[in-house]
Every structure is written in C-alpha cells, then in structure tokens.
Image 1: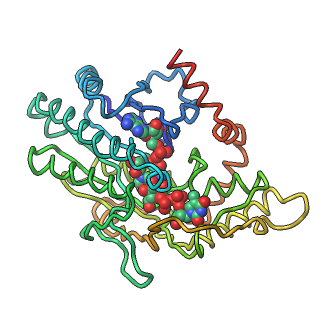
Image 2 (image 1 turned 120 degrees about the vertical axis):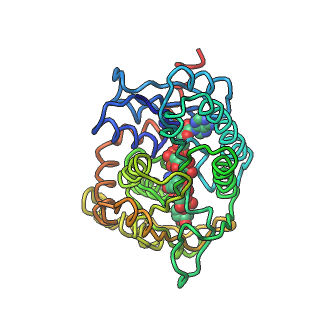
Length: 353
Ligand code: NAD
Ligand code: DAU
C-alpha cells in the first residue's frame, strides 16, 4: 500500500510526512517541484528510509503524474503542493495561477484517469484529499461568527482566489465524475520548518538577527492559529474516516491579533534568549505599510470535524508557541541555510548539474 503526497518538502507537507512515519510504515511517494519553499533538509531525518520515495516534479506535468500513479498504484493522493504566500501572490500572481489552478486541474485529470482504471473495489476505497485554506471565505468583521463549511466563498487575494478555484475544480470532479474527494480548509499554521517569510518564523528570525519586526498596518488583524502537528493529525483522520465529497474546516480555536502574536514571541525570546543589552525584543517592533487588500479577520468554526471525526487540536496557542520558539532556537543551522539560500545551491547542484 502507498499514498502519493504532493508538496511534501514544504512546511506542512514535511511535517505531515514526519508525523506519518512516526506511527506507520505505509510508503509515501513525495512529488515536489522544490520551488524556493521546498527544502529537502526538512526531510533529512528520512534519508535512506525506503518508506519515503522522493520525486522532483511538477503537479502540472501530466506525463509524470500519470506515470507515477500507474507505477505505484496508490490508495490515495494528498495535494499539499501550492504557491502559498499571500504577499508573493500580490507581487507576482502568475505562478499562483499556474500551480494552484492549472496544476491542480492537471493533477485531477491524471488522477481521474488512474481512478477510472482501478477495479470496482479499489475505486470505492480511493481518496483524493485536497489541502486548502480558510482564506477562500474572505474576511470577517470582528463580531461575525466564525467560518462554517457553508460559508460563501469570497477570496480577496490572488492567492486565495487561486485556492478557491482549485477547491471548485475538486468539487466539480466529484460531482461530475464521481472522484472520491475530500477538501480541507484550514486556518494559519505555525511550527517547525516554516519558511521565514511567514509572520511567526520571520519575527523569530528578525528578532535574533537584531532586525526590525515588521507589523503591517495597525497590527489588529486577527488570525486563528493552529499548531502544524494538529493540522497533520486532522488530515490523517479525514483521509481515513472523512465522508467522501465533503469539506472540513480545521482551526485552532486560537484567535489572536497580530500584535499580540508578536508580543508573545518577544516574551518567549526574552525568556529563552535575552538580548545582550537587557532590553525586550519588543523594542524592535516596527509598524510598516499595510498589505494591499489585507483581510481583517479569519476564524474557523471546527464543530463539524470535532462532532463527525472526533478531532480537536491538542496544543493550545501558548504550548504551541513555546514549542515553536524552542524549535527555531535549537535549529539555527536550518534557519541559516534557508535564509542564506544555501539549500537552493544544493538543489541546483543536485538536480541541474
Ligand atoms: P509551502 O509554500 O511551505 O510548501 C509548498 C510546497 O509545494 C513546496 O515544497 C513547493 O516546492 C511545492 N510546490 C509548489 N509548486 C509545486 C508544483 N507545481 N508541483 C509540485 N510541488 C510544488 O506551503 P505550506 O505552508 O506547507 O502549505 C501547504 C498547503 O497547505 C498549501 O496548499 C496551502 O495553500 C495550504 N495551507 C497552508 C496554511 C498555512 O498556514 N501555511 C494554512 C492552510 C492551508
Ligand atoms: O489562513 C491560512 C493562510 O495562512 C494560508 O492559506 C497561507 O498559505 C499562509 O501563508 C497564511 O496566510 P497569512 O497571510 O495569514 O500568513 P502570513 O504569515 O503571511 O501573515 C499572517 C498575518 O501577519 C497577516 O495578517 C499579515 C501579517 N504580517 C505578515 C508578515 C509576513 C505582518 O504583519 N508582518 C509580516 O511581516
């Protein structure tokens, strides 16, 4: 038995693989394009482990995906692969359209053809799990109820619009062709191996480097933070017992304004690695120009996944943040390789020589 995972060298995908192999031996074929966000160092502990088969490739490469599916006959495909950073989508949306929309479409086509060729029994058991985001629902006012699965899609950035389009394609492949799909819409993740362009790892990195901690606008935007390990457990649960054709919201039940997140990080760092001048890292906070079209608030109502599948986050915001700050302090060589681009030279040498 095996499953295909796409984007498994990125932040959430890598955490998913590492968690998966802690509890089982089923092989994962990990297809990742190794964009700037893909880093095989995240999976260094799996080196030489036959349960993990890495293939550098693009989900939009129909020939490759068709061949891999025929060769490995997986019982499921989990699609993490995406361009995932909102700010990058504002500066250059093209890649987001290519990977998140065209790539997901081509992947769905390859999977549909593979699934069509399976025996009746295997067709029933097969799953295509698409990992998406709460950003497809748009922005909430402060007193609005949290997003349920029935919430209308109102994406506001090129990133969220491209993810929304991919969700619609996945839905259409179920309704039109009967493909057994599952879709997840998750809130903001944090934890080990997150690329330091996203708020939490960026603030930790800049704080330690003595750089400004950039807070967009008034810093009063609200996100619902979830420790990545909890997201990975939710995906495993949905893969095994989720109801085909349904979508599941996943959230941390931890709404925090951005400024509060930055203050929490500063407090943790003040305790674990105080500044040499005895001052708080809060001194480094700098309010900067806001992100265009910045969504004010996201919040997930995770009642459905709790009631139907018995999933709840195990980490609180405080315990997850403490683990995360500790991880970054203990893994500074990883941070340095990522921020200096050393891991990119390795990719070029290894794959392009
Ligand atoms: P990431 O940017 O860290 O990783 C994305 C991975 O996909 C990278 O390894 C990259 O190399 C790979 N990739 C990109 N384009 C590809 C392509 N065309 N073919 C194959 N591989 C490709 O992203 P992440 O934060 O780990 O997010 C993973 C998924 O979860 C995404 O679909 C994202 O939309 C979704 N999501 C993320 C969050 C979050 O807070 N990070 C929250 C909810 C949902
Ligand atoms: O909600 C889920 C989404 O969470 C995922 O779908 C995305 O892939 C993921 O990147 C994340 O999107 P955000 O835009 O919410 O994450 P980011 O870490 O970029 O920003 C979090 C908040 O912090 C947001 O309100 C913008 C703000 N911010 C971000 C950065 C990078 C700052 O104030 N300063 C910064 O330097």
